[in-house]
Image: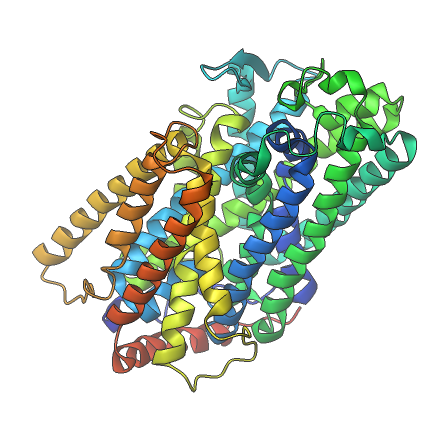
Length: 553
């Protein structure tokens, strides 16, 4: 439980505005989901899982839907901007919300840069924005050139300028761009299916050439989960929608279901459109002359030059739209952390347009540095997937705790089945992180350790200033065995750099037991009902102040 001085805004501070309607919120989620992932995911998944990538997309969508259902209930209970960070604060206190906020901020911060990289990789057809390299594991990556880096910085700056205009203009621009993206991906699917479809491609080299190991690896590392992660915008912008109890479940559930169907159809169309010689040496060797744009390359050899042009245009529009959204959301995360009292107050200040400008500028500056260690789309996608899913993992635990802490709180949307879906959501989060592999997760857990250092510094600052602040160490203690256990399991795995102690037949039951233990432990150390009610009063007071700023659509 934090003190009111850290969560209640001063009367002279501007508030976030409720400018986003039901369609705007749904399209914010869909627009964020359909970014660069679909431009590369179909080929990456086929290389990893073969035709069974269709199963990978379906399973990935179901796992993300489990997580999304938990956040749909939480988002209607507490419609606050930056909800992924705010919810743990209500139920588990400041330590849990700080760790969640740090991981979430790192994950969101990485998305705008990767979308810029994705756009510039396709645009390399017209200018030398990227160059091809073969990395140590034999994979091909396209890294930014000097020109590409300059253009990337300019694009990031454009995102900030558009967001500065305000969330109302953001919603209007995004709605137009989402209609464009939906139209393009639909045209691609139909064109591939009806121009050239080889049913034999699904069996000629085996349906599951890498077995179930390949199917599950593709979920985490090929851009599949990454391609679904945008559902979170329905939660992060909940404090800026005019009817959150109606709009939040619509945005979260509707976006995952709609895009899930589209992605499965796209994967089917991609595999069917390939020429037999394209994968004659096995699915792992699928590549094209212009493999910086795999979908455009297929359109070209099918004789659909007009479609290739549309794809190269969309390769700029789709990632740019998603990058625009994530600059918005990253700023809301640091804004929410400031509201929780575990980040500088300056990050929660907003302009008269309702824009958290300081938070946005911080996201812009730090985001630029990510171009240095991760100069290509392929190198960054696994990191973002693992970090984002890790940040989502707290949601099911919060939902389970709140059902005991606030059993009578109004819930206009309730996830059915008691603890079944929250537990499956938490289990799914752990599996996805595990499947990402140790080579990527080791970098993630280094970033987590850096967050622990920042937490320590923040604690010392509070102590020296003698500011009253309740860190709720015990209530957030479940984070230690959870993160440490996940790091250990990832290191023991046979996925991408692990030592190979755990294999497919042993890993899933081990992670199941591990997930159940953490799920139980978090429920035991949760805040008391009285502490939660105090936190709810603070958030309710803030929500009332934000409600006073509502401007009709």
